[in-house]
Image 1: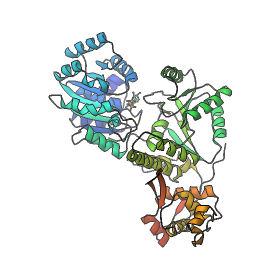
Image 2: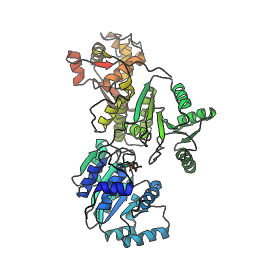
Image 3: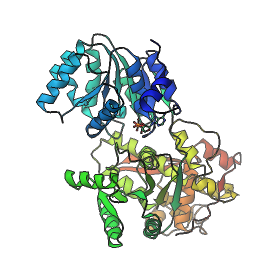
Length: 518
Ligand code: ADP
């Protein structure tokens, strides 16, 4: 029998062509290779393991933590004539026994299993007697402590696989692309020389707009007034902020709901359903909202605060435009957002090493915000995917600023940092450059440095932005340093700083035309 993946795609799913990467992934799997595939949410991962499941002899087991979605996924498969089932805690004893009986009788090609069920005795026993061709691990980042959603139950997947007499092909799928997480997945799931794919991150229908130094509330209100008949999500960093925005919009008769971990599970569920059913248009939420949400017509996503990492940001804006229609993503940035996210990391329950890692990711997000390059290109390159052309659809590409030579100002900053000898945080450097009489500045005798006060003409905010932009472009390093009271970021010189000082390297930025506060 020689069934082609493309035939299955059209016969069962009714699609005429594969999305980028899908066919290659499917071919690797049917050629019996382990695979790790990193594709964004909505990128079409399911088809990548489902089509091989139909081609390979035997059963495919799909491990997924999204219990609430399993039934829908299985129903969708059954509707198109694919024999599938699921096993999770929502099954009663009778249903469970029926499923086991049907597995015995080879009724299924695909079985979705929650990771917690993998050590259920009856299940493991029956599975051991069957030919398991593929174990597909969905949301595979859950195995990694570096991921944002570590689950202990995922660490047992490997021993489950090892308990099978014949090792199946093991495939791992996630939308989280950081290198650490990828290497962890390969190690913890013991993938054998896997084919690695990072693909489909580019979402051309999303425009990316990062708005700095505007009045956030005014912008938000005006935006919502102009888009209140469309489906949209407003993400804020804290529950309190979600509540404030929600109350504010409710007062203005906007069709809105809210979602955060401080609400009971029933309320969260019903609010979410209202949004999914289009009973309300706008959801205000913390990042607790959205995992596994497949609502096609979300036209816009506004971030009221900068998220903690590019992964989070991209996953959250990825909930817009899943139907492929043009959709808008606006990030409202104020420097205070950096402090909020730092604070949230610092009060978190993670261990110190993990916190340093989170700070590093936060810094990449900050660098993105301050970058003058095409945002889409920068984000994709963060995920390991390269595009050649600028997108012409983000606020950096569309900003008609001019390229301005900032070498002299950069040299002033760098030589001041060099003269301050030890590493300091950005505020201290700004104080010295602006000639502040701050107690610490005087105590350290920085007022005697030749660079004291040489950038007086900058406002403190603008100078901070300038230094952050230097960091973002790699002319300076920002290093998270562990001190007595937790970690704090200090600015250090690097090789590029040396080149700038020697006059070997020009610093050119696109001068930001300040976006008109709407
Ligand atoms: P993910 O698991 O990566 O978040 P899904 O597998 O749920 O994404 O796919 C998202 C949507 O894209 C689904 O509605 C799916 O049917 C659709 N899709 C997947 N592959 C294709 C394709 N080749 N052509 C058209 N639509 C597709």
